[in-house]
Image 1 (cartoon, one colour):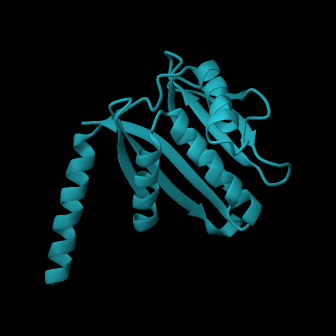
Image 2 (cartoon, rainbow, N blue to C red):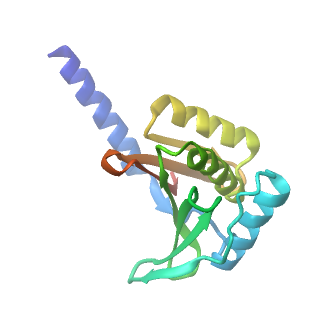
Length: 174
């Protein structure tokens, strides 16, 4: 019974801090700027060459977001990148989806993930700390990005039936 109450207190404390955070756009870039900055980071900064092969194609227009899809990585082992732009044109959230049972795809997804974080202007130290937090918690992590004055939030989910891993990247401020 004591464990139950401790768990309830922990859940309440965690949910109250999450409710205190205000969701904001993850990037000040519009789609075109994000595309070019990401490719520059991939080729010239992190030098892992997991650049977008083509400009993201429009997938869905809705009342809240316009969504775009792009791919990174070698044929048959790529990462699907979803970019969601708000009505002002800024990137509000980013998703990465990939096959979790393919070693080449997993390596590519790690490179794409680092490129995205660097494009969001996180420093190498901030990226390392976020990844360390994500490794310890497995499903959720957030870390403050000093360049943009916002928390970058990463959530990981799995669809084990299809060996699909999804990473959702958003941002909050307090």
